Image 1 (cartoon, rainbow, N blue to C red):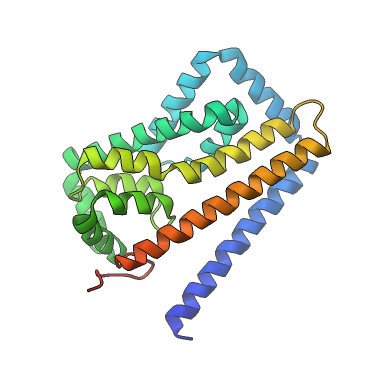
Image 2: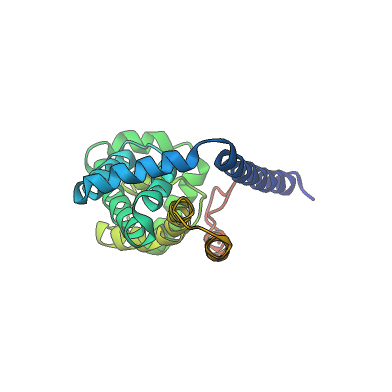
Length: 241
């Protein structure tokens, strides 16, 4: 095996170890920390806010996206606070609005600055070349793949040739699988913290979570395969002929 192949394999293994560590920490935290009490208090606070709670959360999410603050935790919180039925569309819409604002800022206000920041990064050069040829397809595929962080993508696309009318729907649809996974995690925690939760309810959410993870992983891997066909992958610096 080549050194690059070994490095990629090690990186992949590391990601799995990190994911397993986070899962173990969550399980341990649930049993040894007053997570249920925190969850109940937070849900009660959100419920008291009513419709304002939804609006405030949406604004916070949009601001976090624009200011490059990681929003994964907020996505889980949406599921915990509002459940899957409200949390999922709320996050998708808020994230799309935030991503659109970041795109417009990069395109019309800080174009040169963003351009200089990514000029020496081979990965972004490969993405830029692919976007120039395939447009919204690459935008959608990268939204499905963790190759480039979500918030960074928003600003980067502002200096590419992709049109806003293509960028917005590609983003809206592309972020759905990952969003569903994180919101489902929060929604499962919301249900588990409720009264009367028993083995049947835990089984239902466990099966649903496993199914969601499987779908998210499948979609991500397919997206990465397509991106490699366009010369966009870890370590890629140019478009394949």
